[in-house]
Image (cartoon, rainbow, N blue to C red; front, side, top):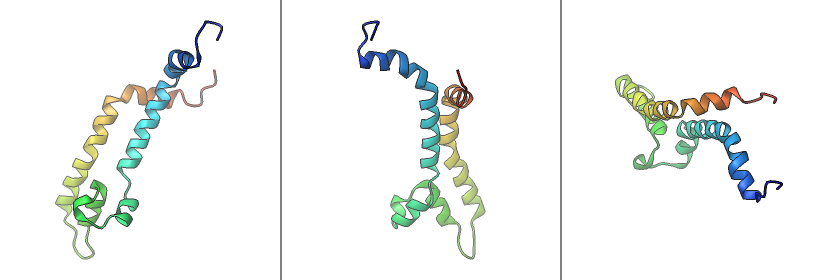
Length: 104
């Protein structure tokens, strides 16, 4: 307020750059948590065309037989988007985790 900034300018110029690492870490962890969610799609969805990737992999594991080559290939395909997201945002992720809990 002393510098002539309104509330939104203070938020945009001061607060947002300080929160950038924490917000990016939160976004990555939320994306990973949502991506690997298994139980809710299995409970709600009963159509094979609308299954999520993790729920579809769970459907490959049968009661009497399990097709391990298909499950392993699907697991690799399922993990690739998360690895790409992590490597794209690795700097912000590590910075957000490292600065968490540091008293200044």
